[in-house]
Length: 230
Image (cartoon, rainbow, N blue to C red; front, side, top):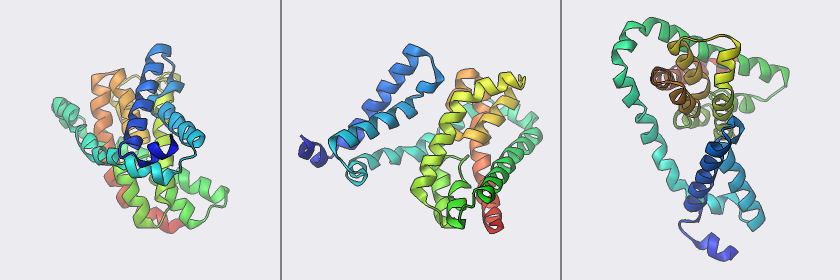
């Protein structure tokens, strides 16, 4: 059976899709944020690979096709932006300042924690792109000399945590304005958080989509500067 799975061209893709669908069903059945489909699918994939004794390289050889859809999926977030174009024009100054504040907060937080925990420069730059979409974050990490695979894992964890806690944090701090919610979620937890923003509201989803793109551009520039601080 192990040989059959490892030799299959579609094993990794099939496992990933089935695991995600199971996670989606579990989330809909329970309604609990902790059962985020992405988080559940990661756990299922790890469990299957561990039980079957299949290494990551073998799995990725047949699963990497899914990454081809990452960039197009991110670009598709432009659709809700177009639908809220007038709203964007009216509030562009607040949006730029809000996203800038989010990016700066993320980078400063990583810098402070890296110094407190005694991280090396390579480990530090690995964490810098944690709050931007994977498609951009991988390139930033690679250019700065970080561990790209760890960067991807950190980006996913950041997004999942944002997806789980975004609505709760907005309630705790009494953040009620749709634009403020969208900016906070998108600049802090990229595409995975944006999925939650779209569940909260149409405006929140559109603004969060904008925050992903702008935060990515800001981080590409700012991360190069922050990389020299440690």
